[in-house]
Image (cartoon, rainbow, N blue to C red):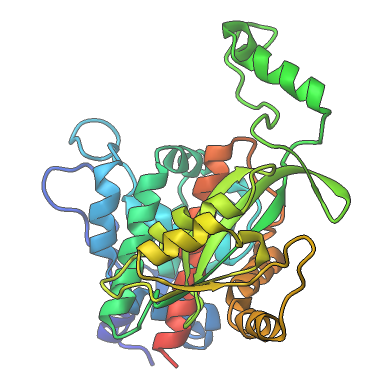
Amino acid sequence: YLTFNYLRAIIPPNSRPGGTMSFKNMQSNLTFADISLFASIEKNRAIQRMEQINAIVDWPRIENLLMRSYPVGKSARGKEAYPPVLLMKCLLLQQWFHIDSDPELETQINDRASFKKFLGLPFDDPAPDHSTFSRFRGRFSKDTMRLVNNELLSQFAAKGLTINEGIAIDARLVQSASHPIGKEKLEEEKQKRNTPEGNLDKNGNIIKFSRDLDSDWTIKNDAPHFGLKEHAAVDTNYGFVLATEMTPASHHDSPYLPLCVARSGHTKTPIKKVYADKGYFGKNNREFLHMNNIADGIMTKASRGTELTPFEKERNKAISKIRYKVEQYFGLSHLHNNAFRARFTRLIKNAIDALFRQMAFNLLRGTKVLTA
């Protein structure tokens, strides 16, 4: 039978942030609802995986970063707020379990014991309202999420993982969340949006939902595409996502190599080599790598009237066997996270969503590596 001390041991309560901050007290006193679920809890694979994640991450250090830009709960006045780490974990669950909407996320948390266990939420307490997730996501900046991802990768490095020695860079097209419209109509909508009247509905209220005007058109493989482009850098050793940037689809890949490299330096280990396909071939990128003492792993592109030498062809083949790591990330997130299509109609929201996806991906990858 299960003793009281045993049950207390396997439900470690989340500590409440100190000081006078007004966050909900998430300490869990065992209820009959809790105890009734523990007969099968040790065999729940989802709980086992999420407990492994909790064990390898120093969440208080991440919470310190979140508190810098999360004003809710810092005052003792008003209604108590949910701790920001709990809400971040909710959005990670949304990524891992392919939950399409915030209302569905609320439903799933209320329905699944494994989710509440991971969140440290008592089983008889309701999940945060779906609007709470939306407001929480809206308070984040890209800089905050980059700091969080940097902290997570730094923690992995402190556990002995060598990260960012070699990085692979590539880009993929992302479909717009809105139906495509012609270039002329798109330009008209953008000009209208820039006027005071363009941000109001027919009743004079601020528009809550609008079409995507950040996307644009490009051509790939002779087919038109309306949407965005995700530029990413991936560690060639363990496959961690080191950087991700969202742009309109028409932006060329090549100029984003220096930016992805600059945002991939999460540890004291210097970047030794950068791998990329022929789309990044060019004088500017090669000079950038040379000036920063980074080895050049960019595939060679044949110029007009000049064919590749046998050595260059073999070199390209060798590079392709390493840079597949970034394509692996694209493939997995395409398959499991519907990353081929934007979730939101604003570029900034999709950029932050990609950074959440980066964190979720790295947590699963880090857990697999560190518990192997």
